[in-house]
Length: 281
Image 1 (spheres, rainbow, N blue to C red):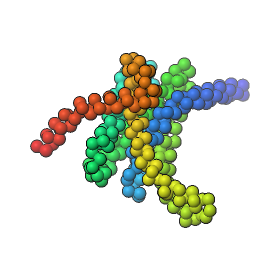
Image 2 (cartoon, one colour):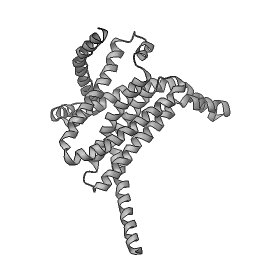
Image 3 (cartoon, helix red, strand yellow):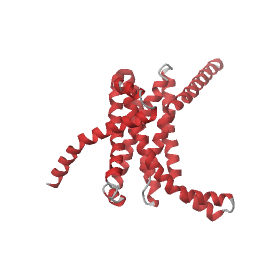
Image 4 (cartoon, helix red, strand yellow):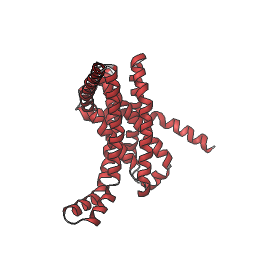
C-alpha cells in the first residue's frame, strides 16, 4: 500500500516536472502573442467612464474565461480527430484581426475630423464588450494553438496541463495587468494623498503618464492586431510565408495584415451598405 502511494507520488512529481518544463517553453513561444493580447485588450477596455472601467474589464475577463472553456476542449478534439481544420479556423481569425486593425488605420487617416465622441456613440457598452470578447477569442485561439504545437511530442496529460496553464496566464495575467493600467490614475492619486517623497512623486508620475499610456496602447493595439493577423497568414500559407521571408520580420507581418485587412474592408463595405439601406427601409 505504502509503496503504491510512493510510486503514485513519484509519477505525479515526474509529470509536474514535465509540465513545468513544457510550460516554460510554451510561454517563450507565446510571449509575443501574449504581449499583443495585453496591448489589444488594454486598448479595448480603455476610454470608458471611470466608474465603469472595472465592471467592463470584469465582463470581458468573464467572456475570456468562457472563450477558454470553449477553445481548450475543442482544440484538443480537433487536433486528435481533424487537425486539418485548425489552420482554416486560424486564417478566419487572422482575417478578422487584420480587418479590425485596417479599419482603425483607415479611420485615423481619413476620418480624423470626426470626433471620438461621435465614434463612441455608434456602439453601445454591450457591443464594445462583445467586440472585445470576439477579439479575445481569436487571440486566445492563436495562443492555445501555438502552445499546443510546442508540446505535441509530450504525453497527452502533459499537453492538457501545459496548455491549460498558458490559457490561465492569458486570462488572469492579462486582465489583471489591464485592470492595473486603466486604474493607474486612481492608484496614483492615493499615493499622492497618503505619502510624501518618492511615493508621492511616483503617484504624480502615474497620474500624468496614464493618458499617454492609453494613447500609446491604442497605437500598439492596432499594430498588434495587424501583426498577429498577418503573422497567422505568414506562418500558415506557404506563398505568404515565402513573401514574408523577404521582408523584415515584424514589419512584414504588419504589412501582410494591413493588405489582408484592406481587402476584407473593400469586400465587406458593399455588404455593410446593403444592410444599412435595408435597415433604413
